[in-house]
Image 1: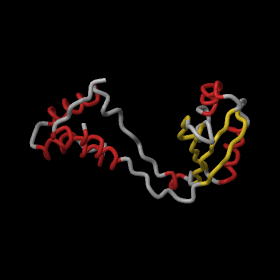
Image 2: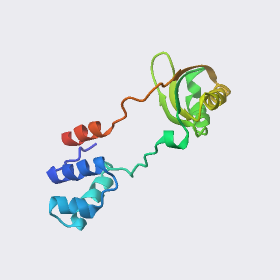
Image 3: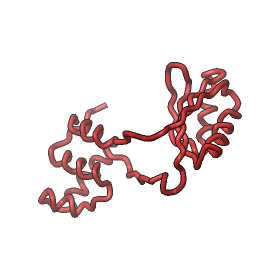
Length: 159
């Protein structure tokens, strides 16, 4: 895989987009003293290279009543069933992240729920999936760090 080379202008564009994905190209162009068309071409180049993929909608779950966050470690009967089980888990809309991992668990998921009763129902749905031997749940008391922008700034500077 070829490593994409970015120049200082590309880095500045990325920095601005990391801070605000909705910043108009005209604002970026004005800050860089170039045309909006040039910014568009550079962003398109980074999209075509796969560096930029879509945009993200950030939701304040607390404001819409989904304040309960739990993590569930899952032990499978047989790891050959991993894809089958992930397909079933993927149909549960309250499961927002799933990882295949090493260590004590085979899968590790994050779920969002309205409250502990709702979370219990979601966890029971997961437990009912054929091929799951055991689950262990952990409740998040508070999210303290959720900042991918620092990592993106660092990685993009290395390109």
